[in-house]
Length: 477
Image (cartoon, rainbow, N blue to C red; front, side, top):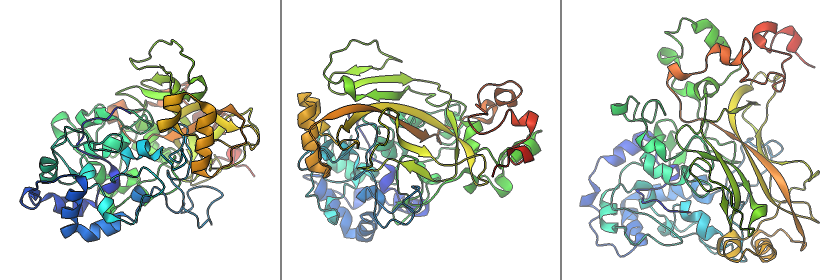
């Protein structure tokens, strides 16, 4: 991953909005004067006043990279186990557990606010390992790469500049998820740092017509627990809904001549569906990743100015201004879990997908990014394999060795044989809300509009013609 100069990391160590504002008040140059020899020495100084905040933080999913499912993953409603990035697989860099001592963490945890979680031995209860600066520093070119602070970082200046997290802080991880800018999400990337209203009405600065929101404005936080549930992850610390703000005096569509019709849609259609007509409207997002081509030295033209092949990582595809896939979502997800047996390897393995149907009153139609992949499966045990990519496959191009070492780190036995299987992930789109004048028009979905696949959604046809989902003909037993 190419590291950006940063002022920061991620949503994870933000604080409640009220606490954030209070925290931003004092000039910390008076308290954190240095000189500081290394990052942990800054943390030691922070702990003199903020021991409680540190104690709170090390209990959160952003620090532990796992937590209870709270009913989010269908089939695990009553499980007492905790799940998260630390023990789950995805279709990007696949797993953090690769390597006999889980050496893969040394790459993936560049986006973990610690010094440095690069092996099994890391002590998650040690508050002195927290990297406060990655979330709170605003100056000093503070950054990290490969288990170290970047050489151009000025620790004294970074420490003196701490404040409430900004978009750049949160974006260091959430814009660069999957290894580079705009790889994973499609609706979160570095363009938001300088966005105008046309890209995002909330996060654009006020000078460019936006509201100037930081992440904490919606992802309200208490005791370093940040609200927000992802369709990619098993755990969360609270839900965020558009209606949290858009209610009462701020209810939507009040000035629209079609107010009644639009509000009737809210029973079935999520706000995002109409207000995110396209995703990846800034930079191109990755739409596929094929690991099976590692080591093949292919020559494939770039897409959207981005490389489509890497000898050590495989083949990619990219797209901009993408029409979402529309699916029902009732707030729960189907999620591939480590060690889960694949019943039919000839079909794409669903890594993550929303649950919901036309018959569920609580379900609504939401927009998703459809992301496809190809990754190794153990040919005998029929589960997706963990392999060591960092300090492994990326250097050696040796699948057999990387799979053997991945098994040692993950605890999943490796039979010695593997094959590649297709995967699919449906990733919710919730950011980059366009101005109201760029929301979907009626004719894009109805009256011959082709944006919605009504049959795939369970309708017999355009509901404008035959009636909505609660009409008699759509009630199914």
